[in-house]
Amino acid sequence: MKVLAAMSGGVDSAVAAARAAEAGHEVVGVHMALSKNRDQTRTGSRGCCTVEDASDARRAAEKIGIPYYVWDLSDDFHDLVVEDFLSEYAAGRTPNPCVRCNERIKFASLMERATLLGFDAVCTGHYASIRTDGPEGAPSLHRSRNMAKDQSYVLAVMGPEAVGRSLFPLGEFETKEEVRAEARSRGLGVSTKPDSYDICFVADGDTRGFLERNLGEAPGEVLDDDGNVLGTHRGTHGFTIGQRKGLGIQQPAPDGAPRYVVDIDPASRQVVIGAAELLSTRELRATDVISFEPLDAGRRVHAQIRAHGEATPARILEVPPTASAPAGSDPGESAHSAAAAVLRVELSTPIRGVAPGQTLVLYDADRVLAAATLERRS
Image (cartoon, rainbow, N blue to C red; front, side, top):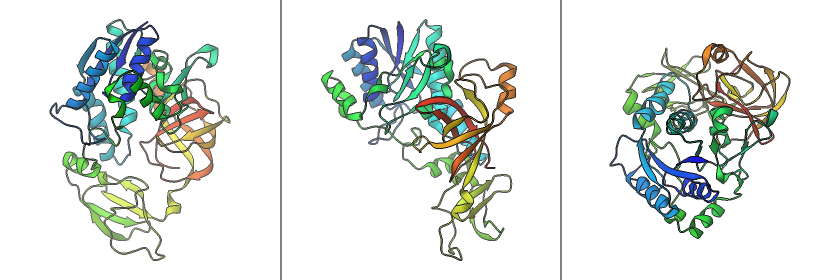
């Protein structure tokens, strides 16, 4: 099989590419240049597509013995991930840029190019597993055996078609140290390279500063849930639902309890704060549903709303008439109707901090059933 291996310059993608080559596939390595700043350097575990990363990927490919290329996807990344991140925050929503990157870049733009060049599959260093135990033997997406690194949540938006054309060789590793040990045994110099974290295109980790630099200031009021003005802010894009610190208020709550952001209204430029119990909800509403198999009302599932959050037992209350198209495909009319239709899920226990724009992923044990985008809390 002809396989395109996405090589970030880290240990995970290097070991994944090596395993794909060892399995007998015809592998070609490609580094996706996503940053428009080619002179950007890595700061510890922070940084995106730096000079060091491209060089590390090239050296790994040479050691594995596979061809290596650099593809400039910076325009796609900026338009489809960075601009989406900014527009979502400007609208009072809380996006996950890693989800968008996997959906729109690694498993849309990259796979589209791979298909045009005649590749059968794309291989990455994500921690997830693909099996053929879905309905009628269709490929299904499962959690990694290494739950601490599991990335099935951010991959769920791929949809079944992209999953069927992907390879995740790291899904059966139980620990990251096992991956590093294999890299050392293969003579890969990235075996000790630190993991990247935080938002890759916010290299200094200051998300609020990044938003202010790009969206500017739009001053407004900070209110309590009774409508009393408690302070001011420089822009609603500096807040997320459930936020506790940096609220811009001085006086404590009458009962002395902590207060949190419970609502954001960009139109009126108001941020509402309140007690923790105002954040709790037992019903989730989501749109833009991408399903791996048919969903039925009444089905028992597990619901997860954060990449490394816990999955909560839940029951499906309502499903859209049709599921939206998998990432990267032509959606058609049925997908447009599904995008507007609502998936409703009832949780067995309330969860806090549900924010519009977050991704909802439903599981059956360790198998991904569907992904959708959360709307405002019920």
